[in-house]
Structures are given as structure tokens and as C-alpha cells.
Length: 61
Image (tube, rainbow, N blue to C red):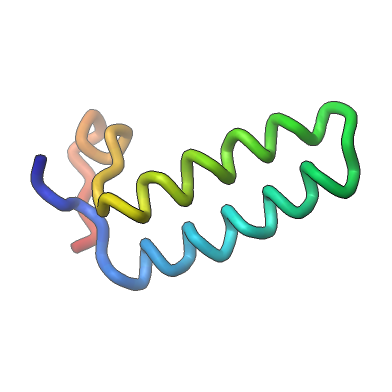
């Protein structure tokens, strides 16, 4: 699996992932959807690969 995310992209995703998880835990209700997105953002940042980027032929790094 090749990396298709630049360092800045990974940093932005981690930051957004933390914000989304915070909102999901503090707001409750339907905000859990943001929590799932936050987990995905943090996970893709950890490995440096985004499957959606691969499908769309997009690469930041």
C-alpha cells in the first residue's frame, strides 16, 4: 500500500479527527456520525493512505 497523503494533509486530518471526536462525545445525539468520521480521519492519517484518494486518483504527497 503506497502512501498518498502529504505530511500537512495528515496533520490536518488528525486535528479535524480530534475536533470531531470531541464534538461527538460532548454533544451526543446524532453527532456520533462526526465521531466515526474522526476515527476514520485519524486512522487514515496513521497509515498515510486514503482509499478515497486512490479511487479518485488524487494524491497530496
